[in-house]
Image 1 (tube, rainbow, N blue to C red):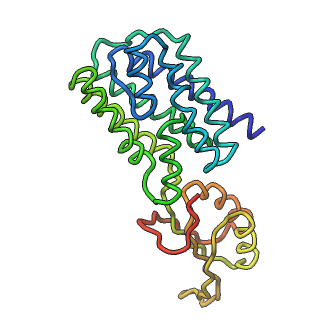
Image 2 (image 1 turned 120 degrees about the vertical axis):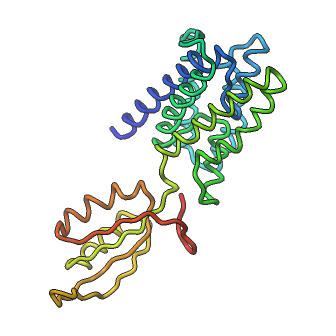
Image 3 (image 1 turned 60 degrees about the vertical axis):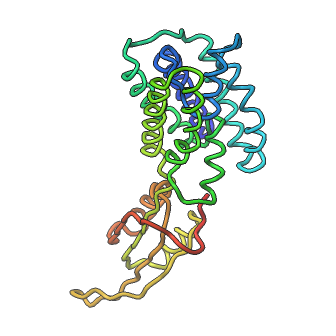
Length: 272
């Protein structure tokens, strides 16, 4: 059921992405970034549809992702690319508004929401998304910002191929898309978790069974009650908070829990 639910989300997000392309960006020749942006350039200049170019240009990158990110991820990515490509064959290329700036802004927002959910549910739209996901396994930086940096090259290409005002619209669109992606894909955000509990051994065991994180146990004593308690400390990703919350509530609903965002993590911290 989890796999079916994941595919449904990826399917819906991929159709929405095709809608953003055909109804907001392509009518005004406002491109998106990276490989998809190059596909848009080819689609506007050459006879083949943009959706077909998306498939052609993504093949070598998806092969590399298969080797580095795993079969399930690439399977979901191929599914997303195919759904986006097919949807773009049937969604008409017509503008919702005659204002290119509004199209760039809203197209960027809608595309960012779609891409964010595709990546959140362990897929990608191919292209530089795959490259960025491989890079953030090594570097702890926001995904949207990295995608924006890699995709910026399309701005210069579109500037030479079309006009520089459209290139600036493109820059605005992919910048907005990157911001929205980072609002949805929050795996890069690290949280410091501190739990003060009377059931330290039981809670520690359950957390270790469900997380790939080390836990530091500190002996503590309540200043007012003078009661000895254990303090469990660890650093987790934002996604793992959804795993931790029900575990703590089930084992010790009276535990004192502090969660705060961590600016930087050094040392042995698994980043996948």
